[in-house]
Image 1 (cartoon, rainbow, N blue to C red):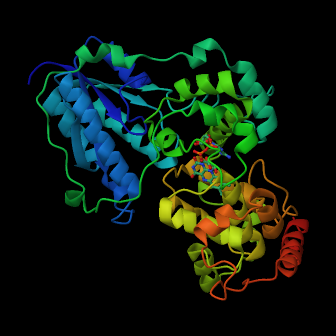
Image 2: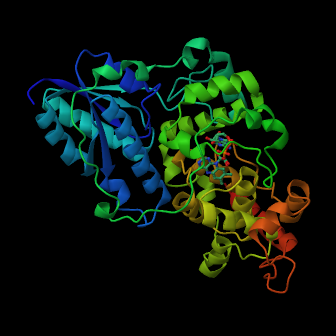
Image 3: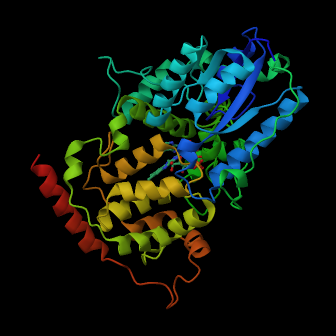
Length: 434
Ligand code: FAD
């Protein structure tokens, strides 16, 4: 082909509707080549059965089907982006590349590198906000600093929200501007060293009945009180603008959770050191218990604390864990077992379907007390009272821990009261010396 083109690089925005970069590309006047890269820098780190990779693969097939109906095709590659892009630019005569922002440190570096490679070849790169309503430094305090506490951030976020922010970018109405092509093949999972996963993925529907009464039901893990849209927000298989419009109309508590997501995203952008260690440096001095056997019991859901074990088993089996139980299991690992929060962070990152670096890191640092808007270290979840309050009929516990109440169920690995006192004294000693 010899005609100049524009390209769109799909990453965490795997949809054709209301996609900002795609919308602008389709209006560029150039035929648009849609591109997806199975990035070896990321995939090489993952286990061979990874439900998220299977999900992405299915999603690419589904986009391919829609593109075929529009007489086009996604160009799907497997390899290193810095090697693939120069080839693509030459093959497709790409003059402009359109991409939506990604806030993770690796993505930031990668995108700068690709922009430089393209620039050398005479092509320009155009970036857009798509994954969140407010990004980077768009919500700042009155002294022009990024917020590190959620409540004032949330207030400013709400005050800044207007119809324009919530407006969609109807890329789906411009499908005739894709470049014409017959379907190009997609590398199979096996060719990339993966096996298909059999973990089911929650549907991408906005269940308005759940959202409407979200504030009443969201804390009870046995009930279907949350939307399970995490994986779809992570990979952009739904539009945040469409979801936020529903939240604004139906439930303020639900909207607040979407704001938490953006809060952590801007923390990651403005304070990228959180990926490597505690936001508050003094927490790096905590003398953690490096007990791998105890950690394994936590991972396997065999601590003898039923709500903790139920959560870990739900995670291991389904790739999901209810937020209330995420908070408890995280608190238990850090405050009862005195194990480094980063071990737990890594385990969740490997298992969660909705794993999002910013929210996972934020959630773990919150639980450890080391984060921006952290729970103070002396606030320690009591596994027993959490169970009584949030799973009073034990429906959730019995579902995931069927041997609970029989001699087969393990005895508690620690005494909660003693563990709590020990943690308080360890944290106090380290933190009072700073
Ligand atoms: P719903 O309750 O229906 O909420 C809708 C969406 O809002 C979620 O899908 C999510 O995108 C966002 N959201 C809700 N609560 C939060 C929150 N507290 N912080 C940030 N975003 C939120 N969330 C992730 O998306 N990815 C993670 O890797 C992740 N790891 C976590 C680790 C720990 C230790 C803790 C305590 C929380 C973590 N969370 C994470 C936040 C929260 O637990 C999940 O977003 C939520 O449980 C996902 O279920 P849902 O899709 O049914 O959410």
